Length: 110
Image (cartoon, rainbow, N blue to C red; front, side, top):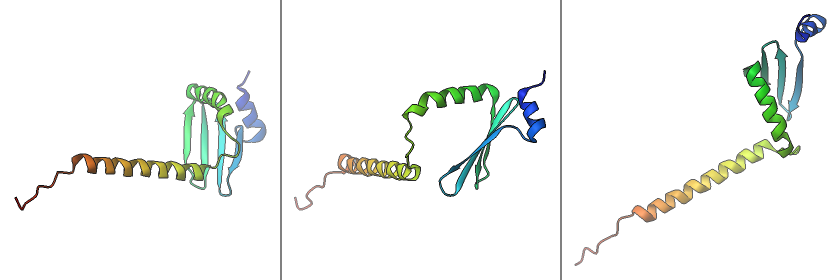
């Protein structure tokens, strides 16, 4: 008996894959081949090869955490908010260091 993925390849001319549009420009393609899976992003063209053993862990993790994800999650907005939050923390840290390490001025007229 042959691998079901090999039978799919003979019948369709490619391994099983799914393509999803992610926003107006970006597209993600996941393909499963014997022994590994690939994740490709367009238009960037980045490809990630994941071995079979790791792919199973990725799927388990994805299934467990999927219930916490929102369908209407806006990635660019979330990244902007995270960036602004980080900048605010850095400003507070700089201000704290200024007050902590600023040497006291001596009165020179003494």
